[in-house]
Length: 135
Image (cartoon, rainbow, N blue to C red; front, side):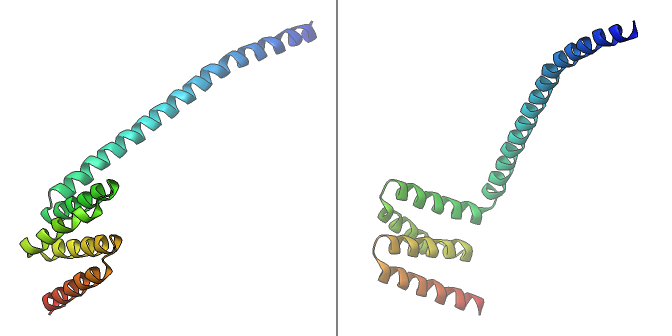
């Protein structure tokens, strides 16, 4: 009699365990989905925080604006339109961080548009200004 009970219990146990696996798998999938959501939300809040940090600093904000202007003109195939914008920045600011960024972006743009000689002149002028400022 013990053997027949064992033979009945084995298929019964197998059925119970096999029914429990999908529920366990569903819980794992649900947990994985929740973890992905939390990771996504953390990334979103990190972006907001970094954007605020840049936006609240005038130098960083100005540099980011210049980079975006260059990026957008480059994407449109109109890189040369960045040149007057950056020259205007150099003419109207004394902030060394903004001037350095404008100098680098301007020289890069000039080089990309086939004006290497002008790019070198801009870099030399920027270097001289930086050295004078450094003392």
